[in-house]
Length: 371
View (tube, rainbow, N blue to C red):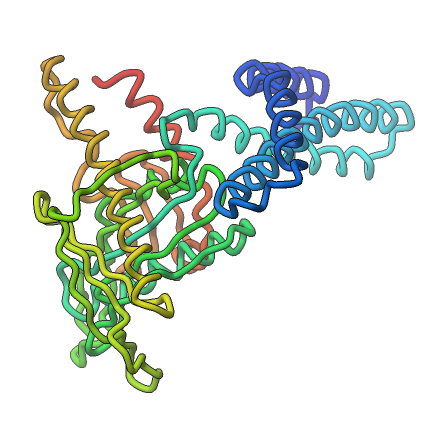
């Protein structure tokens, strides 16, 4: 076993942290924390609940970022002291402990590095994720439900609050579609690399002949709209239908027409909401998601126009971005980044950080070097 070159490794960690701090700008972060703390202590803060929640959420996030940066710096210095003590005393057990801490620091540093790449216009926002079953019949509906669970488990592991906004169940099993919020800073920037077409290959549990089935599901990720966005949609451009909320067999259903289906007439975008208690709440939730989709659509159109003017009309993302193969072998592979895992069960249980981080790095590299 090759002995770890701790001085070189610690020097590398310090160098990487210096680069991260240069991007994170801790002095500006401290100034922002001071400003938000002053706003949060105002006696009339909660006169406007929405504005108060924005202030307290941003303050909490900024403080967490500062504490994370400080914690990494302290851990690097503590590791240096631990190694020095262990080497002086020839303590192999403590050196093994230092090796484990070094590996943990590398992982934490990698996550911090990825965060510095999230500098897009809406990357700091919370996210609204919609999953739709594609080709593949009942297997596709089941796959859509598997993906929804995967993302909700990922959010749970991270401690990110989630809220299911709409579910449309398929007749036999699974979901036709589902929409949910992930209410955490940078959820949109993080999860936006998951947008695209996902493919599942397995022996179908719904096929009595045990044949292999390929099915597809689409994942859409949009930023959560804030009051400051001012996305105005004329009433004349919106068609609203109300209907009775429903669930799968055995679940209770609403006895009033509280569910809302909102159609944006110029674009044909349709949003359904049924998980709030009243029609007014569902209408507000649907409008917010519609605004988010229009906001993202506008940005994509602007980017497409820029690419066309530059003579580059190639699509940035392929239709199929990831494959989950359960038969005849076990493999999950991202077709953009080439990152893969031989443990689909862990991936479907929310262990997708490595795929997300690879996607964020790939996106940044792709933006810097479109060729």
